[in-house]
Amino acid sequence: MTASNLQSEPCSAIYPYVLLSTYRLLVCQVCGFASVADEVATHLRTRHRDIQPERRQELVEKIKQIPNILHSRDDLRHYLRYPTNTIEPIPYLAPPKPDGLKCRACGHIVRRVQKIQNHCAEKHQWINPRGRGRPAPNCPVSAYELPWEEHVACQRFFPSRAGSIWFQVNAQTQLPTDVREEEAYSDDEDEDTDSVFGYDEVDCENSEFADNQAEANGRPHANYPMMRDEPNMAMFIEFLELLYQLCLTISTEHFSEGRPSSTLLVFFSGILGFSKDCSQFLLARQFCPYLSGLIYIQRLILLERALPLREYRAIGDPTTPICTEHPLTEMTSLRDFGRNIARTEPPSLLFSWSDDRETIRYGDFQLSMDKFRQIPDYFSSLAEEICEKLMFDIKPDIDLVMMKDDMVNMSSGYSFVKHPADGLDKAYLDLLYSAYASRENKLSKDGR
Image (cartoon, rainbow, N blue to C red; front, side):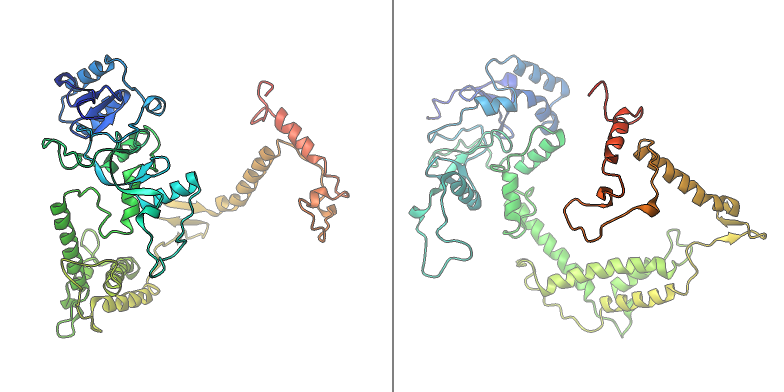
């Protein structure tokens, strides 16, 4: 199918949408992906807030009047027909991805090696000749031996959920210059919106959001998919590395003339020792948690210096020497000293007794001994009420002293209830009858 054969109907009346009559879909020209008719209102409200509400409502009404288009996600599952042969790229969709992997047996396309391996193994009983682990030396696997094709240009209508299946397009065709080079909105943002509005489940098989997460562990700085511009990404990564270098420098600052307070971090920790209104110092037990937080962060920073998770291209390998005197050792020593001091401090809760020793007070709260003596009776009575409800008011005449048990009986399901001398083997029937006949919380209602 050529681009000229693709029936599309761009119309200013429904801008930013264009109608792909061949596939019965509406495609947002700004975002580069399709929408079903029932989700147009939500898409405009979340993605195109610059459009006036009156204009949005007008678009929704006009789209409702368009005949023979797909309205819901269920329609996609039943009526959407994907291209079966290689077609020219659809200009209104996001630009084709050049790294598709196409199954030679059925034409299924994904963009991750692990996914195509799982597909071939599950659908076509393919067995990976390499097995687990690294490939053996001098045993290369030729590309023609793989059950899939590589470097397949592909597009898709939706970035996630139903309708997000990839289809092959002609890699040689250049899209018009007015088509943007990058998608206006990343797929992970679209799926976040999907989860908020609860449209549908995420299609993990074809979702680029899942692809980004899979890449995050194998590609440095892949945790920032929202930074799609390479220059911006480079600047952002450089900023993070410089921030790490600053934190490392502060954490390894040398003492001046042996004075710990000469370092910025120790001096700052002293400020944390003031109360919120700066009218007094905190007690040792109140100050130690602040020190613990600073110590924990410094340990993470120093651990990253000793065992870097990734290469630092902007700042290089941090070579800041660590001597015996640095803020971490001082704070650890100070916290240990503070914990010893905390043992000698007065308790955080102070109770006072009345002169007659019959009433105990804490602030505005007071408790007399008469009320205190009533506490066991109160909880005992409450426990009895709960037991009566659980037993549906059944009060069996059982002498616990006379109960028999067989401690050597190891058969499955045995308990003292089934011991013949106890006569409780039929007791569950009485309980079941009471449960059905009970007026409150009964198991049976209207004969059901």
